[in-house]
Length: 80
Image (cartoon, rainbow, N blue to C red; front, side, top):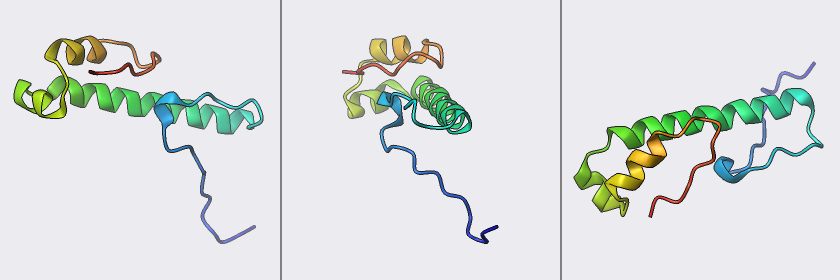
């Protein structure tokens, strides 16, 4: 057994990632749960932003409300 920590090399853009069938079941589940957790966090943060912060980011309040109301398994849409 190696003393090196295990490192998973996940793609940088997890929101647009298709899970590859070449990965093991464990890797696919880990990647899927990671993507879902990041979507949950992003949508929660988006719902907590005030109108001024949204305008500074170029996001309309309506688009932010729509996106933050989506379930975690739905892909992130464009916010502009």
